[in-house]
Image (cartoon, rainbow, N blue to C red; front, side, top):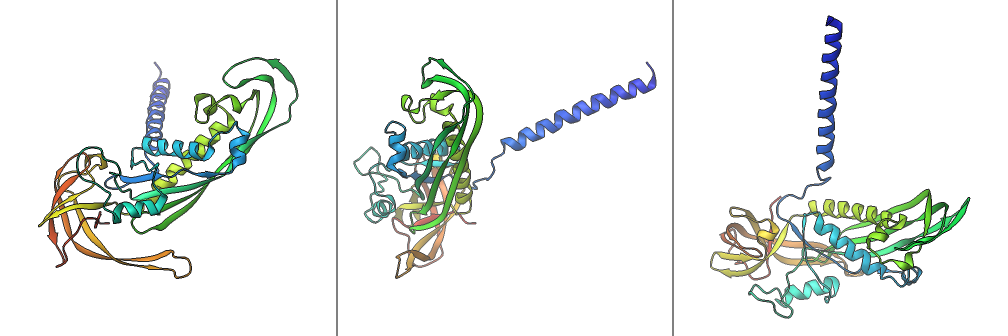
Length: 324
């Protein structure tokens, strides 16, 4: 074989190998999370979203606010970065505060009425846009079909948006740590069947395959990414369950990715400064009581030994914070 042909073949093989390496590198980058949550999983609650009644009636009396909050809860759970807690019967932040002040966080085994685990964050939201409008059509052909699809086949332009306003609240301090606006526009032109949203359920497979469903999914993906970024900027927190001398139990365990040897700071909230006009929490005074080293871990509780830093002893309900 002539030398220049062998050289060209080697160059081609090298180029192919380089291309494969580049593809693998891009795939690895795509697989990496946009933001990493350092340390244990944060606990979070998604409250039922507010929404306009017109959104509900337009699609066959859907519960748009409840549906989107449930879908966001599922998406956060699937991200693998949070411990998801349910609060169906509790009032938002006030409920979270009452859990702690009334000692309703119960470390004892077995289900009991009112026995709940306090969350670090609660997501409160409002659905501000949720709709599509079909415009235009060159030709229409009558057809029949199920799953909400049927009626006319034609050239259709679909416009609209899915938008949500979100507030992420630190339940320990009642501070709104971040407000978010998430909006995903809908704009697509295609030869498609008309969509009868009233014949399908919010969040169903048939809904997911519609322009509105696809925009909803993308909006929720944006919301998850934003919530992860906010949580990453806040130190992980748990609560003291029981104190016996220097032995301390806390309300987080394997489900929160805790392990033996982890070290945390125990803090006591000494006071809060609030705005006299609005009642908004402006600042929180904290006192460091010592360092806790985890010695044993169960599914939802861990036990450690305290290295005191102050004469004041920790009490049930004090904060357990991951050092930055």
